[in-house]
Image 1 (cartoon, helix red, strand yellow):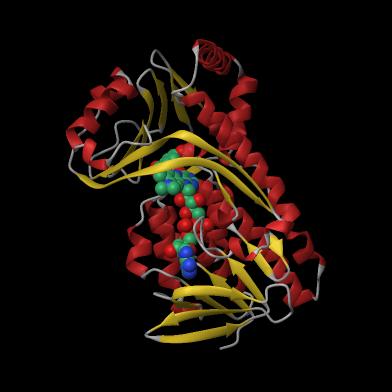
Image 2: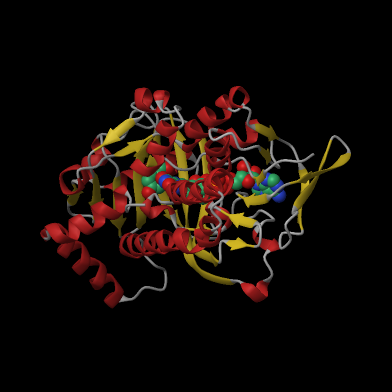
Length: 389
Ligand code: RFL
Ligand code: PHB
């Protein structure tokens, strides 16, 4: 098989990129290790920046998102005593959209056949070849046979554990990493959310987040130690813990119900540089990870894909070679700013097992400052809604 662009991974980064290239008539094949059901079964991001919703609109795929998604004007930081509202709409003139990654993925998947976007699911042992040459290729196994796809470019959209990043020789790359000493235990349940807006709570027993997917489906998280297991957290224990950590106001409105999904995710910050090596281009979680506290992971994948699609479209439609050469620098400038914001909010809102009394006083002082300063709230708001492209 031969194509212009071969994409590894059919998560949001790969699907968005595939659609943006197809919209300009560029030939694309996506190769995905998992099945489509497996991809849709993963419960992840819930908050979309305008940059992400704009991409869906540009593709003409935003109708269901606008009909079913919930535009939010603000969110809250809770510190055990008070709720600090960050009025993102008043402070930035922008909103965020609460619409699950699962739904974004579903919309992109559903539109693939009619737009000529070929996705090969259940592709085992994907391997990248000759990325430093003008004729890169990838191989994979499907239905007992080994297949090869030759392409002009390979795009690594295969998440943190995929093979693309490994195809960049360590001698030309740098990786920066911070692993946090805790994870998030998430629960999804068909119960109405306890508040209209998200609450990020710093409580003595650890962080908690009240989020949602719709008026009837809630998503909550609690900070847990890395050695904790799902079995340690029957639904009742989790609801009790949320009621304590989110504070009395939220607890009074907390509707309990059986979990549809429960999982633990470790938290890390990670950046891999550069995001291009020869004809291999990385986008999304394959190149960087943020802790979920700032709701930035999916949105960063979308902004990478915006820059990468511009570069590839310039290459094919305008014979512009500079776009590809400049992709990594452009994408990383935005990545590092999101890394900073996600790290700062994570540090502010969690209880660190190795934190001392001084660290705690710093959190209290920072929350006090945020509560009393429009400048501080504006800084948080403009990062939360997403920095300009
Ligand atoms: P994905 O979604 O991991 O997709 C990668 C795809 O590549 C496939 N793959 C392979 N395919 C072929 N061969 C291989 N060898 C392969 N190995 C892997 C995988 O099967 C998969 O289909 O990466 P992508 O597309 O870069 O998208 C990134 C986002 O998924 C991620 O950043 C967000 O989910 C992060 N995130 C959040 N982001 C936000 O913007 N807002 C949020 O509110 C938010 N909340 C979250 C989150 C992530 C979380 N977890 C579980 C990590 C909340 C949580 C709990
Ligand atoms: C979610 O709803 O899954 C969610 C919302 C906000 C975050 C992280 C996750 O910061």
